[in-house]
Length: 190
Image (cartoon, rainbow, N blue to C red; front, side):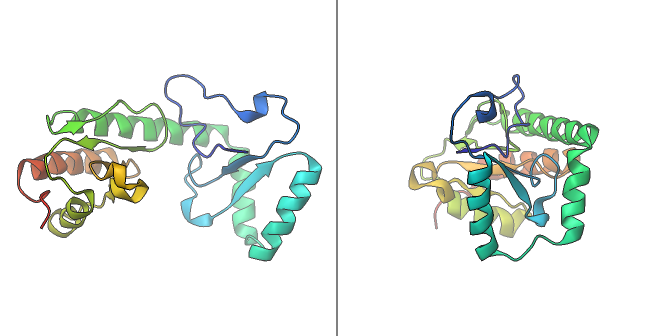
């Protein structure tokens, strides 16, 4: 089984897909949320052999009755629109570069250039840093929403997940304000 929601967001060449291999029992999972920017529609697809597809369909039918028709039509239109798909991936790639450039200006932030996906996951190098506390205070004081790294496990409490889904000017401003906030004391646990 391969969840390939982010497969198109590979900025250092094409990412390999499980479909390139001749595995007998393959589940290729994807959604329209990322590549086509259809986040709220909650529609996706599975590529597999007919027997597996039938089982997946059986499980899905117990969870939901039907994806609304207008969403199904939008998904079909998206599959036929390679240009919009390409444009969205390039747009997110540009936004990731903005985040990387701005956040990398801080000595308190360790960040690897993003090679895929639609977010960055910087490590904050400040003693006593708490991602939960910082995220809460950043939202409260600056109106900037980030996901605490600790959401992804205790080991990542010194990280933040910052999504690149708003326009470049907003991202640049938010990244600059995050850098400034880290210079202050709002990141300390209280």
